[in-house]
Length: 156
Image (cartoon, rainbow, N blue to C red):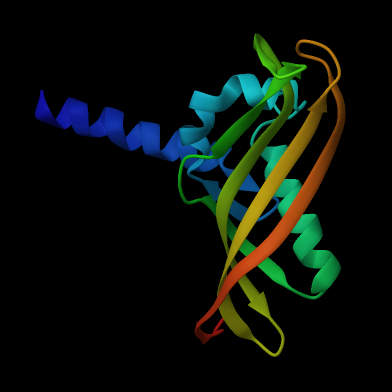
C-alpha cells in the first residue's frame, strides 16, 4: 500500500509541473491566492490566473531588460489584500468598497547579460476603483523590484 501512495504523490507532482510551465519558465506558489479569489474576480484577474499575473510581471521586467531570460516565477507568500471602505459622509457603508488592492510578492529566476544568474524580488500590485458594488471602474498595475541578488555565473 505504501508504494501505491508514493506513486499517487509522484503522479500529482508530475501533473502540477506539467501545468506550471509558462513559455519555458516554471511557475509555482500561486495556490495561496485562493483566499483572495473574490478580489481577483473584482479586478478581472481570475479568468487565466496565475498566467495573467506572470505575463504582466514578465512583460514589465522585459521592458526594462529585453534580453533577460526568465527561468521561473514564484509567488513567495499569500497576497496582501486591502479593501477601502465606502463612505457616505462620515459613515462607512457595510458591504461596499471604494477601492480594492491586491499585491503579490514574487521572485523571478533570470539570466541577464552578460550571463549572470539572478533572483529578482518583485511586488506586483493591482488596484481597482470600484464603480458600483462589485464593478471595477479601472485597474492600475504597479511593478516594483524590491531586491536583486546575483546567484551564480550562468552555465546554460
